[in-house]
Image (cartoon, rainbow, N blue to C red; front, side, top):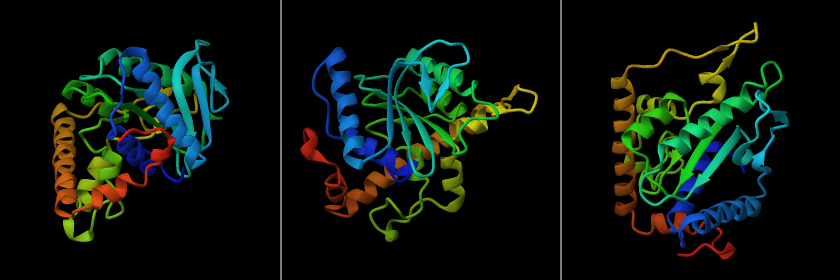
Length: 246
């Protein structure tokens, strides 16, 4: 796996194929699809269902947490939780993920990862405005099938159908990139062993960045519509022979 942004893009594309089943069977299919994809890409992955260690470190509390995967990208270490909810994502799922990953990270001051540690959550469900706001406060990237991930939108021309479709300006890209921040930026270890949590931004600032993501997600869908066949070409890069249903 080359980059964190590439991982976000590919998981978003995987969510476009639909997921069969109900309940635990549906969740298992989604998790298996991602596991097959990561194996196909040759990505270094730790599978951690109920695991006690992540990136070699135990939790601060000693509790084991459900973490679906820890992935080494070229530019980041990614802690992932893969969910296949129909409709809205329950808020407790994201609250639990945030608390569990904090528990791991708080055991790492002074000897934690040098690469940015990114948190990636979701798959098939949709996030409410409030849930998206909570994720934004803590720098957690959400994967939802109808809304392009903020890290993908924050890239310049790399994932856009053609340069002529006018992707976001540098200013908008910086604002979009803010939605996906390393754990080190939102829970900063201090020399005395404590942690510094930056003051929360105004609700209006969070809202404006979420609106910006909505706007540019819509524009990217429109750009694909205007460039016939471009989305199909992108979808065809997914390893469909691994059991992904069209």
